[in-house]
Length: 119
Image (cartoon, rainbow, N blue to C red; front, side, top):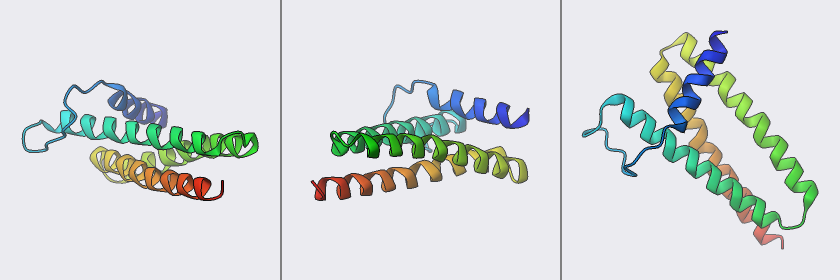
């Protein structure tokens, strides 16, 4: 039950539309700053994922594979960060999500580069 509540809280924080694209810890309260960073990371993942799908072109097997991998990765991220939030603090859990998201963007971008190089 707590796991679902944590994941729901993270998803709600991520889904809130943030007007300002600049996340400034010095001028924003903590909640707005975390929401801003989460929204930017979510957009970066979406953009990197979509670029990869485009780079894969008509390779439906690869597209199906990355779709499945992305779903599993999201579950892994959520489970891991739930654990972190339960054993540390919720703030640590939020940072955990951000760190996973930033790493995923790098990975997806690397996959895109490799897919384009192999065309």
